[in-house]
Length: 397
Image (cartoon, rainbow, N blue to C red):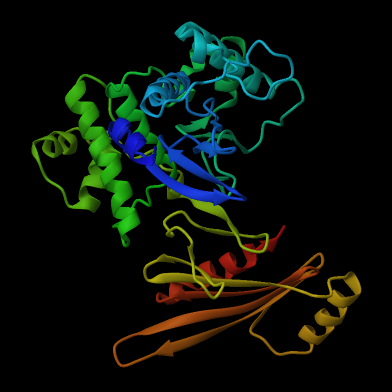
């Protein structure tokens, strides 16, 4: 099935993996940058289930995924069980599309869902503050220009209110509106990764180069399908420069790149989750977290580096914390930072070798539940205050 899906969905640039969950293997399928993985799990030798959340991506994704699953059935001699008429069943397509093939059902259900979601900001369910809608929870883009962060860019209060009244006006929320793979599909899938994943600097890892190539290939495909659309010319030109690419389209892109850049949550700071229920604020240009076998987590924005390790206390109580706090206060350190039930110390040392010199901020950070060791490396002396502010942003949730 993994090979079949990769072939069937080749134009979607799928990512698949097989993982054993408890006693059953599960096939994970990532088919769009804004979609959670679709999961195919075996419940025994003769039964399997498929689960997927499609509302975060749009009706086009729901229809395309359903069509793929329908085509999967004869290839593997499957028969999909229709339980939509039964009471209290957990196996169903909420839109009713899977067994009816009626596209309109999907669009109506998606717009009704969007109307309810946006209306939640005005009926007391949500507050109009920095809110992440259909975004991964391990990152928070709290410095976006508007309070509501979505996969295709921030949305204003006015947009929320208008969409709550007329959901059709907010269809730009969905990255995959029509199931056909037209220019709009390829352009939106590039935008999704440009907003959340592109670092807006020269790539330093293979993963970062792959993200750039994905966005550039998607934009070029969209342009070749329909060159009359308005594209993110400035950001497209930036990525061409980072990737060091030149072709007949790149000259046109650079010619039309005249406005200042506006796309990219990672042009500002990002709050990221760290192991052990810790969080820290880093520039969005930092790489994805790298996890070593020894429990160390690292991230890089050359020449700056972050290294982090967390530990849990066998004895975690307020009394134990106060004892540790007293011991820490008796020590001598360059920097001390305290908050409620939290104390942290740091020292900044200059290091050098024959070819270069750099600075290392080494810190120990203690809360009631545990301790974290956080090290920040920088080269430019003017980054000292940045390193201190980054260290102070570390918190245990």
